[in-house]
Length: 115
Image (cartoon, rainbow, N blue to C red; front, side):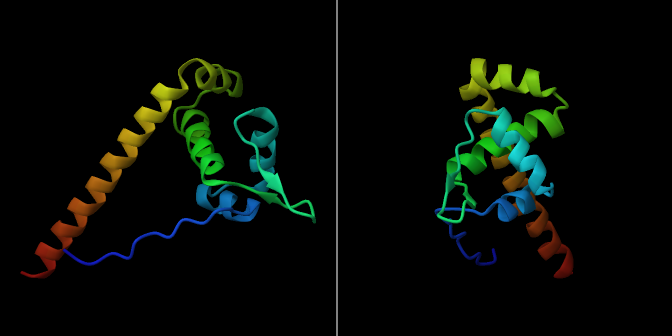
């Protein structure tokens, strides 16, 4: 199996980096920040938003509920308040399965290229 560099986690992410992770506009990130209490970026002296890993994880949950599952903002807010642990657990399971799928596809491609 090929060696993979471990991902280096940053302490803070700019709004542009967060928007790039989800392929959305920075305006949507600002809008979700206002709509969802769980997003609490710090601001530097210039007023630039600095998002933590926890903020990014919460954006993943929100993105999954709103963009992937098609929930309304009101529905996503309600779900986050009532069942945040369940949503987080389900999201982690989906991420793990996606990583396994990617690994299996890489193995398949290596086998196919070796023929």
